[in-house]
Length: 212
Image (tube, rainbow, N blue to C red; front, side, top):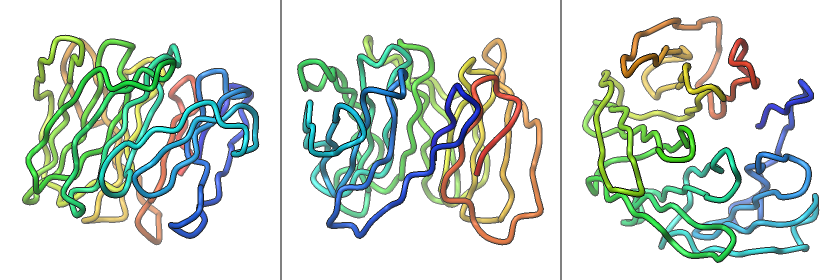
């Protein structure tokens, strides 16, 4: 699911795990798209998955989350800890090379979002605790910015301006929203009225609404 600058919502159908499923858009949202299957992602030109620009073997197991940087020059992706490879990698998509790695603890699951072009926001869950971390991947520094009780996060996103974060957890049907301003995180809302766990969530560009 992706929100577009036109105000429309782009729904992406996930196929069987053995097939390619479209799962992300670059910033221009018209030319480059990402298709995903277990352990691989493929960047294509246009809407067809057959017009391949680049194919990346992201991890040994299943790719669980990925995101473009705002300038479309980098792609960050995380693997599934159940497959023994939950390493977070940042790729230079023009040359297809890994430029940075983050090694979480082997038992943790990780969701990822770019925060500006210098940082990756990590949402790392383990042993009933979820932690937001800011990773300055070019220099390798990682800072914890917020911690809360949750066994696992199913969906995670940030607004374009970086001031809001939203996540759904395995422990409830609530959708939680936080404000992140001047390095401080504060809970802004706990959205109810949902009948099941949320698998996907995204802000519209100005951060005022969520699609789920």
